[in-house]
Length: 205
Image: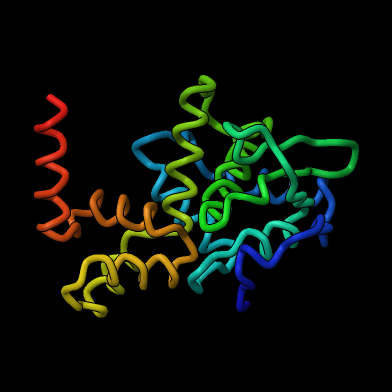
């Protein structure tokens, strides 16, 4: 599949499957796992992508989630709300802010994890805080899997940190800020960025 760009959706995207289909799929995906938590969320995200055949980057949820049975509805949400999911009758719905721009992909995968975590067969009991944090990590690992980020960062290999972050952000379908954060987490941050952050941190202390 060749995903469309996340910004392409400007109207509700109708699901190609039903909520019951998604429930069945989720049950199959989580059944092999005795627990899903912070220690294995990266492994679970990788398993999730392999089982669904999501090999190509970017993994655009605006195109992919309706295929799984989720109706997407861009609209105007409160400023502190990026996206929210609900189940109404035979449909799962995710409403998301049309102003998210490059952050929409992470927000939508975040909400999908919350749908997964609400399934009766989900193996771990999570507090609301744990669920939120795991949903964010799941979204990061789906959109910016470590192996592919490392490989493409090495292949890109040019020294201009701003351009490198922008190029990778475009390739992975995320914001530049999200990509910079991911590069920092993986120890791929440009030394000049690390030095700059250290200076700012020292000024605040």
